[in-house]
Image 1 (spheres, rainbow, N blue to C red):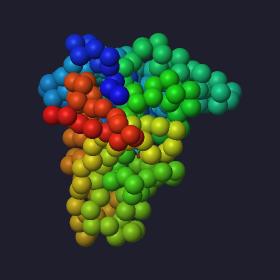
Image 2: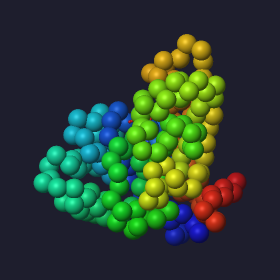
Image 3: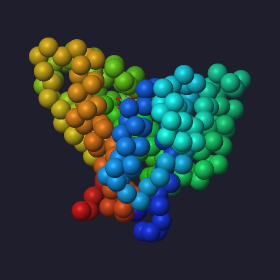
Length: 218
Ligand code: GAR
């Protein structure tokens, strides 16, 4: 099954979901500007957090940016409906979760099967699943004393961090690492590289899924 788009010549419309600083969003923006990502454009950035710096990054680049916060809705269902509407308005080919700390509505996963990707700051299946996000992932990796960690880009399915893996990049752990230092190294050496690369692969038709596993052609 091809992922992302239906025609080779079509520009891939990407919608990026964020919650925080948005350094991964920035890596995607820069990747497009520097033509490391071709055949793709960001059509909208959605944040669940009004104060996310990621929103400012989008606005600075002239990208459509909206906040859909659960705080503005009386219950989860209404929030999910609003999120779905904010996505559907732009009819994206690919949804990129770049530090998005919201559990996605099942309806969204169903409608965009094999068209949602996520960046996770560890080598899945280590240090992933419920409760593993952001700095906590690096705290757990250091607690366990692993010598190598890294990052993973994967498709999103109904589970937490269980979808087909697209790309992984290892990163060495150093003796004096704190969670913050390790987080920065994993971002610099892994996340900001493999997220743009995965998007470029999808935008250029190099990613297929067979038997629940990703195949990348060159
Ligand atoms: C990134 O490290 C990303 O891998 C992580 O949140 C951070 C967001 O940073 N995502 C997860 O932990 C998802 N489970 P950013 O806002 O600067 O891109």
